Image 1 (cartoon, rainbow, N blue to C red):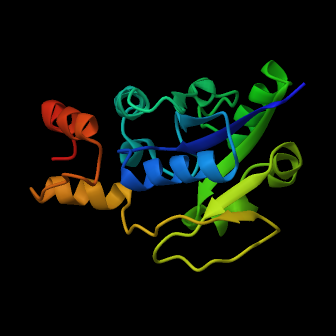
Image 2: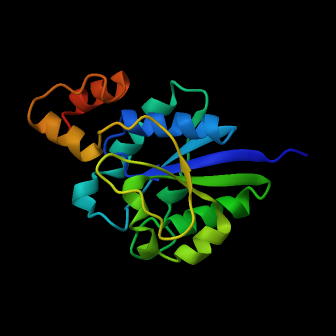
Length: 193
């Protein structure tokens, strides 16, 4: 029996942008995955709620980008945090996924900006035993390994959610930096102004 192979790309997705799509696509092909699940954090432990924005808004944008790619789906496991502080911890989400889908081989996909933070993640040693962690290099971040990781190759694109928010606030164009349906949602909801 062949085990289903699923990549998990988590994040705040505030907003989702071209680099997220490139990572998902490259992981899909390089790891020979059956699908990539985009998992928006309910309340990321490393960001304040105000900086992150409402979960429902971020989820709406993630659903828009997933709707146009047959290899992308939305994973809501992190929407229901187990912790009383309401924060989304990757180790809890992965444990829930592995328990509910024991026949799936999961891969955790992260950007190079998160690699240095890995040693500070909640129960990182448990997480490393549960799921292979794969990373992509990111412009402006040194390629380092606090422990062995699998590095995947992708075109380096100097885009971040922070940069997109700053561009919107400054009235600059975000055409081709975010998918069209995300751009139209940002405009319709008057986000980041």
